[in-house]
Length: 392
Image 1 (cartoon, rainbow, N blue to C red):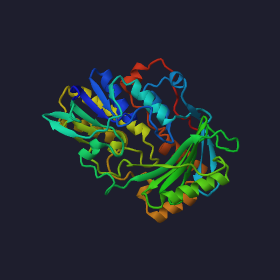
Image 2: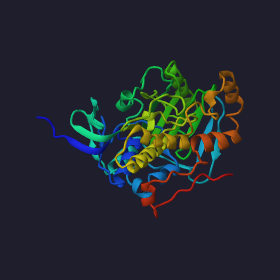
Image 3: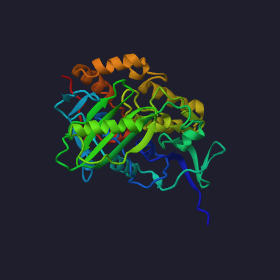
Image 4: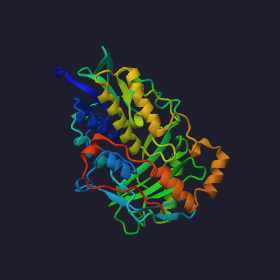
């Protein structure tokens, strides 16, 4: 027996931070929203996983409520340097970010979005229907949002050459229980180690009883060997538990400015990793995902049913204002010749002043950029607030 047709104003494909944030903003604006995702939540989502004070503010996160039964690891410093060299400890004193587990964080955001959910359902068919859409044969929507990550089917519909002709960041990581006292990784100080040629970096981050270890860099070739070498180096420094390396999970994503994905068309748009929005210097994607969800929701809500490409172009303009125009950003290490990157890796990245002022404050924490206001942040007035990182 065929299912009854589901009709909505906006169909969001993907229930991660980008999709759930966009959906929540649209619901608050009075639109009928359905989120469809190929998996059930809570899902197994491996990610180094931390959120800055600006993200906390934008999504209106009640820290006390979130911390009940979930990992919320305060971060007050970092250990950073170059793989194979002696690192430096950078202390801030105050909390500058929070470690989270994505399986918990994504589930929390999706549940509180207020959208109707269709989980455990992959998108198999996307069809134009007049000015709108028909998906999987029984969902009709005036507007379609692609928020399904790097391999999002909506991105493919818009012509993304997934797995071909895209300069991706490839990563392998694992998250596992690590209650072994021999592991010296400190929960309040994530450890970040750059490859010598600045083609990527590895991390070791303890979040409560869980440890997340991984490495990401440009391209897939030789990645497994690099991850193995990184794990062995961490083991020598007693940053990981004794014993064999756990099974690593792989994923890929695009950096903003490196991809050429089409992000909008009539009544269709991409957010988050589907749009290729990860920060080019750090590869961090949660904040760009959340902010793109808010920006697109604003445009959709203001469009009053006019979802033409011309009208949605406002979203692209807002993205560029927030993240910068397409093209390799001038501050990105990947825009430099390989020999110069190697020289920087040996002589600059390892310097404490550069590690704090540039690598951490600007590349990873984006402390110089204020939080993006949203309907969620407006509704969270009076809740626990978090200050941005302090300057020494």
